[in-house]
Length: 261
Image (cartoon, rainbow, N blue to C red; front, top):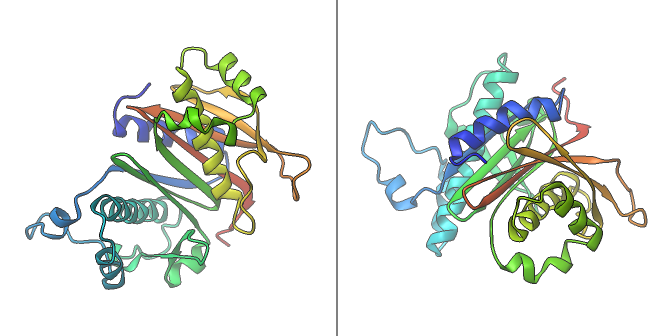
């Protein structure tokens, strides 16, 4: 398993085009930033990437952990957006990070605001857990989820893991302990829910693990389907999953696209 965030990010960037061919995407992964230290950086150490409305939103958070996670998620979202524009839409002027506004829909889902977002038609997903945050930008509806291992996953496993799914995980990932295995499934389903849940977010038990597929490197693809009794059942939905330190990170890109045209 990759042991560092940098190795994990590099691994995912190499594996994404293999699993999700013809789906342009960019990722960012970073350790959580201390907001006070970030805002007080001396001149020459890099500009603050938040616009005034975002600085006001940050100031509204009172819990230190939540402030740090929110800030780092925004930084990651802007980094991923810039990387995506540089690589896949070089014909567009690259905006300053402060001009890449990250807003939220009424559902809470993040979106890239600003005039260039409508032109590029890109989607955004953000996640944070433990000491890290991550963001994914793609030309299709997408989802990313990062989650620290926790004993809570065993206590609530009946809410998201059916017996046949536990058997599939055990059969294909016998070297993983139970909590990390459950965490891979949790993050895979959470990422999938974000990707397909713009109109209606499916429940965890509506998404069913059908099989596991190995990839090169330290990644696994969990292929999810939807309970046939659920409305608007999608086709198979592959989710790219990996682990680093004591966390799981899952990424999904859907077949439905937001075209650049």
